[in-house]
Image (cartoon, rainbow, N blue to C red; front, top):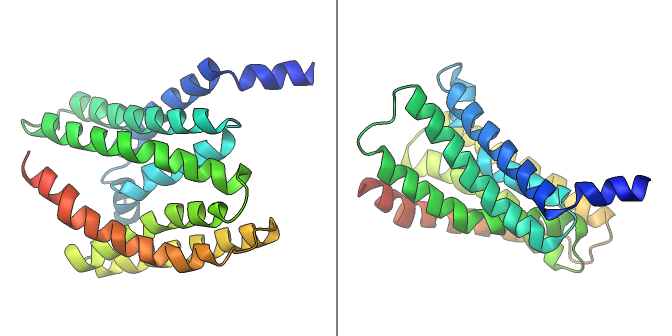
Length: 212
């Protein structure tokens, strides 16, 4: 009976429906928490928030291919939930459609990557698990660099960089205890990836958002 129940939970329809529902809820919640407190404002108006939850979802899905699809669907649903809430809140302006399209494309690209990263950290084999851990942590570090270097919000930047460092340490310890031989690659690659993420956000995403 337990095996039958578990298999039902792992069916593609069940997994993708759960990813869709959680993504919609996450998008709606991040919009609703805007303006509550300065900390929640920054935490919810953040790429990291969506991405970390997408990686967590990937870690919960048993099948690798399904984790990729679930990550993509969850990111798209999160965008949909956020902008649906924005529309109902009467804050969806004239340029909102273009911005929503840009974030949806970014989510469609990043969702499978973070779904894969979450799945690989938990269920993968070999040193690629350390690389996947670095992919997850680099987003928080990269956003910290963006907040400090691009926006000059140094108070928030320090918090994000500290959280990114703690996440990197946590994942490195987890991988070491899981028997990954080169677990230290996570700690080495995360800051390098964080810098790359910052440069990509500054050079590509910011330009796209500025053009819509």
